Amino acid sequence: MQSRAKAMGHAIHPVLIVFPLGLLSTAVIFDILYLITDRDGFTVAAAYAIAAGVIGGLLAAVFGLIDWLAIPGGTRAKRIGALHGIGNVVMVVLFAVSYLLRSRAVDWDPNAGALILSFLGFALSGVTGWLGGELVERLGIGVEEDANPNSPSSLGHHPRHGHA
Image (cartoon, rainbow, N blue to C red; front, side):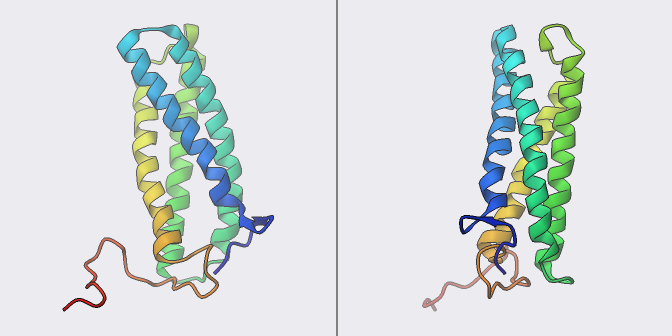
C-alpha cells in the first residue's frame, strides 16, 4: 500500500521523521559533550534541540497515524506499525519529560533523571527506527501498492536466491 498522506508525490511521514530523529540524537550528543566538558552551552543547546525534536516528532506522528490507519487490520504490518507508533510516542514523552526537568534548573543543567530519560529515548529511537525500516523495506508499506503486509521478519533466516 502506498502512503495516504503525500505532498508533491512523496510520503510526508518519512520526510518529517528525519528532523526529530536528528534533533533528539543531537541533544544526546550535546549531553555527552556536557558531561565530558562541563560547559553550560551544551546544556542549552541540548534543551533547544529537544524542544524542536519533540515538536517535530508530534508533527511526524500525525502523518504516521494517517498511514497506519490505512494498513489492513490483522496483518503483521498493522502490529509492527502499532509498536512503531506507540514506541515513538513513548520516546517523545521521555524527551519531553527530560526537557521539563531541564527547564526547572539553572542554565538548563540536566539532572541525572533528565539525562537518563534522554538516553533511554535515544535507545528506544533505535528500536522504533528499525521497526519503521521493517515496515518500509521489508513489508513495502508506504511504498508499494502491492505490498505484502504479512511478510516474515527480516531477522529470520532466508535462503539466498539462486544458491543451492
